[in-house]
Image 1 (cartoon, one colour):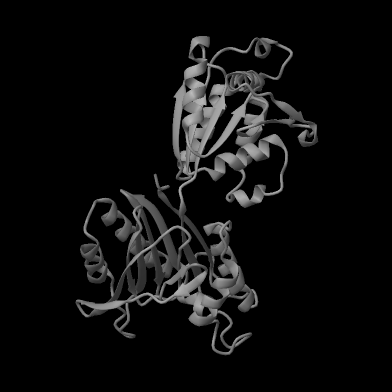
Image 2 (spheres, rainbow, N blue to C red):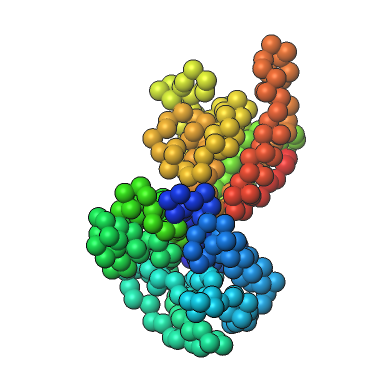
Length: 385
């Protein structure tokens, strides 16, 4: 069975020098069977541009969420957006990208730079068709993406970076395409690529951006699954059933808690060995078990992993960390779909009044982690035994 596709998204922006609000707006929302990204660039800068750009992305995403056909969404946008009577140009532009889980992509652009489509690490030219809607020309494209492909859209602040300064004619589309080819690789995140693009533009502007600059990135890759088991079931008779379900989940496997690891090890006929090199002043050491990607101590480590997840935006911030809490946070962040098996049997050790009060909050901490992951767009399936 083929692994389903996953559409990972990232976005970054920098405001025009001297402005607090960015005149660009980027919206990424899940829709049935896929994901929608809309980038809009409001005319000018500051508050007015921000309002116009935000209005554009809100209209597009709301209509799409209601199931309106894409063609009607594009027509509604072009009919709704006002036009500057003096300069005879629209008050806001847009790029609309709809990527479906089966790889089908629809792209519509109005006065924004062409979208970058990377395949096998190189930028490929999209085949556009022009369409007149009212008095405005919309460029449309249809493409089928596969795992390893990227779609990158930018506002014209990115294209114009460095103009009149470090680069006489600006960064321009072709130079950005070559730059992207040097930055994109299999393990880099969509968010990291978006941030790199914006940071590079800021440098070309010599830290005084002459225009609002935004990058939106979609990375197409195989969907990542994970299974996390913490705590033994209330009924010992359920041990075998729960472990069997846990092991049948595709992807990476994480076990937290000494008793839980013992149950898994017994049914697999495998031992757990402690890795003392991963111990810190705050976090107990991790363990190793054949067939399991991570074994950690229980409640204490989970609570610290929750704190870590609350303070990060990108799992690359955890690369190189060896303590159990950081590694657990990385595993939970890494998975697109995570299956959590929460056992609620009482551990007698946690009834000891001399232990920190936090040791009694396993269920609450796991529920908080599940909610946080859902808020970040993860699929979370929680089973309580």
